[in-house]
Length: 368
Image (cartoon, rainbow, N blue to C red; front, side, top):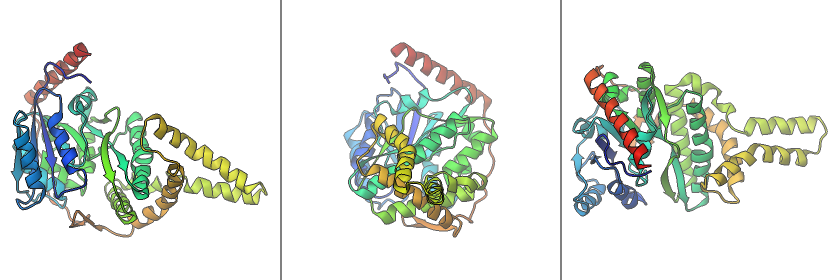
């Protein structure tokens, strides 16, 4: 999307913690956005974190971009990422606020894409993480979860008017966030995106997604890392949206393929032919989706789709077996919740934001 001649100011908040394989590239992408008016706020919990020097170098190398580093978190909940964002959000000067994970690789039109997805009834705009640059088979396995499984379910939900927030990238309008209690209200749930979903729905608003997901470079992955992450996310979904989670065990291909095998055996059909046909019927469209969108895809991908779907029942079962997990070295307990005070939105701020959004859409249209 072209850079608009004008647009509402945007505060881009990125919590950082530790160094990852692509940290230099993903954090540097924050400084190369073509949007005319935005500020960058990096948030880190501890001054001794190794990522601090990288952020300071990037800020010094891009003096033309308003950017600062906020050191020190505020304990508002069990979620360390949200605790890390609170002071940054409090210091944001603009009424449009983006919370973006440190491993999101931002295209130059990142902000334009987010604002363009905002509609009259929007309360939040998000992006799924698109797993990219898998450097081994287990990174490809993670792509099988992130891209053609989780992303397609998220986009399907949004298309049906029942969108869910995704914490990798979240665009907020300040008055909507404050009407639900502010940034601290996202600590009402163990996951800030689940809390955001409920906050937005409570105001009768919708959650929308950008047209195409933003990249998350993966590099090398271990099976243990991928497995633990999926179990952690499943436990969060079970905790925050139990009724939606109940039928999730039916979402993959394991049960249909198992019943197909049973029917082929009982019906005395050619079992290999029936299973091959079912495999093509179930995973052919998913493979075509990845190929059509130029998402990571190799000859192993369909077999990894199969492995993923037969892993889902085990992940589902483990989700019911515990409330604790470790995330980035932090032991977390989903049963621990902190009370968060309610807040109220300001109508004049809402009117101003709506007017700014209309100006942005108009200017973008003229630029196009």
